[in-house]
Length: 224
Image 1 (cartoon, rainbow, N blue to C red):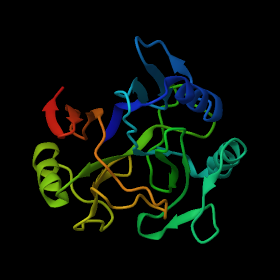
Image 2: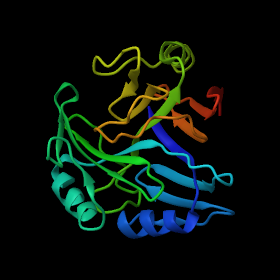
Image 3: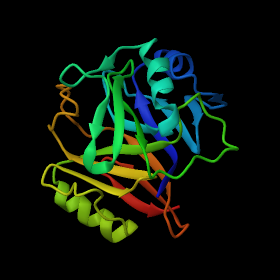
Image 4: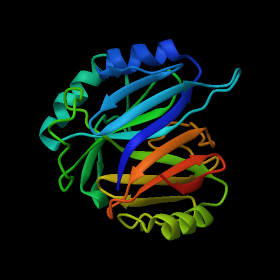
């Protein structure tokens, strides 16, 4: 599964532009009334959040293992990284991956993750140095098991890496994961930020080449 488009809301579009174009060096695309960036195969879009709302998300970018340290240095030189037990590099042993985490200006939890078995990004797709496509998006719900059942039936995707649980389940594959978490669960690693539903729209291409959309909340799947 891959993320073709990821559309989120932010309270300050200019702060988002400064961060995603300046800190992460993502190429900006033309967009009406919002922002759009190309990151590997994914178009990452931002709209203005309704007044007084502060939506926060979790998304992850794939990073080739050979470029992981370079990507970490690039990001760390411009914004603080989130540490776990004093370490900026976090090992996900069960996923055979390493990652680092940081926040954007809205407080969303961003991740760069390198997996040894990950398919390479399209070499023709423009991308920032070391940072590839969106490979994880968080979906926050009240009942994880019900959302997991819907996604398994609708998208024919299954839990990844032994992650199925009552408050957290990752579904998909190394190319693209939907991270389904329970409302109120703190985003990893020890951020203290309680997960809450937030407006998003996703365009996905499944392994059978069919295209699907997820829009919410409440989150629902439709054929694209």
